[in-house]
Image 1: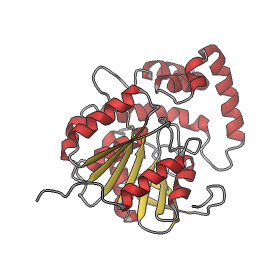
Image 2: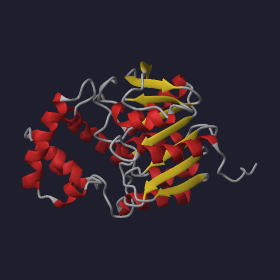
Image 3: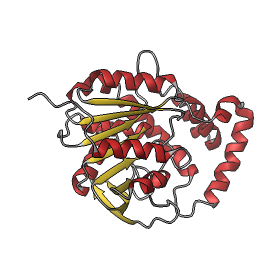
Amino acid sequence: MSDAKTVSYDTGKVISGDGTIIGYRRFGAGPGVVLMHGSMMACHNFMRLGATLSGDFTVYLPDRRGRGMSGPYGPDFTLRHAAEDVQALMEQTGARNVFGLSAGAIPVLRWALTCPEEYKIALYEPPLPVGDHSPVAWLPRYEREMARGRTAAALVTVAKGTNDDSRVIRMLPRAVLVPLMGLGMRAQARQADGDVPLKDLVPTMQQEARLVLDAADLISSSTTVRAEVLLLGGSRSARPFKDALTALHTVIPHALRVELPHLGHLAADNGGHPDRVAHALADFFTNDHMPPRSR
C-alpha cells in the first residue's frame, strides 16, 4: 500500500462527447480503475483510497466537471453529459473497473444502463429518490443564499440537507455553524496547496442537484444493466441511502449488496476509512462473486 502523502502521480485528460476536457491524476500499476468522487469534492479527496488500491491497480482520479483540471459544466448540462464523461474516461483510459461515491455514482449508473457486461461497477450510496424522499429538498434555500452571496450559509444548508456524516453538523444550530464554516473555508483555502478549495466547490451544488433531479427514473431503468455491480454502503449511513441501495439491489440483474459495519456515507473520502472501502473494491474487482450468467 502506498502513502497518499508521498505517492507520485502524473496527469492526463480525456475529451467528453460535447468537447469538455475531463482531467485526472494517474498512478499505480495493474488493471485500470476509475474513481469518481462525490459532491463538494475533487480528485484530491480520493488520494488515500487511490493510494491503497495503487499496488494492484492503475488508478485514475478524475476531477468531475466544474472543478480542478476539468472544464465547466456548460449551460445545457444534464445527467447525459455526466454519463458521457464516464464513457470517455472508461474508453480512453482502457479501464474496466469504476467506482462512484454519492452523486458521483449517479452518472456511473446512468452510463451502466448501456455499457458492455465485461465492466465491473461499484456504487457507494447514490442519493436517488425513493418513495416520498427528495434528496434535494435543500435546493431552494441553497439557491437563495448563493444569490445573496452567503456562501458559508449555503454550505451549511447543503451539509444539513444531505445527511452529512458529522454529528456536529447535525446537532449545532445554524447561528453557530455559519460563522464557523466561513472561518473554516478561509483557512482551508490558504492551505489548499494546489487542491481545489472548498469555497470553489460550494457553487457546484447547483449542478449536482441537477444530476439528482435528472435521475428520477434511474432506479426503474436499471433493469437493463448487464455489468456486475457492487452496491456498497455503511451501517451508520442515513436511511434514505440504504433505501436507494435496496431498490437498486432489487432491479439490477447482477448486483451484490455489501454493508460496511460502523461506516457512514463519506467512508471513501480521505477523512473517512478509505482503506476499508478499498479492500471491498479490490475484492470485487479481482474476484468472481456472482452466480454464472444464464445463456
